[in-house]
Image (tube, rainbow, N blue to C red):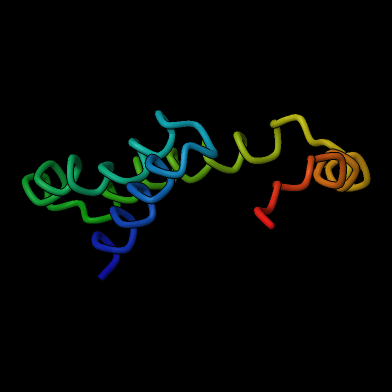
Length: 87
């Protein structure tokens, strides 16, 4: 279940283009890339390393983005012109 959820969340993050794409790729495909290595070395915890790196990178991207105050976003939304209606 974990590989499917991580991959689905990573692909959704890539498609949404909200956070860093590179971080989303590391998170989404980290499990799939490291699973054969961890099976070969008989170290299942090794699989968590790329997922953790991707998750930390996504968290950093989330907190380091510039934010705009909610009041300025609301003002920008209210200044849009109303669509013309045919009478």
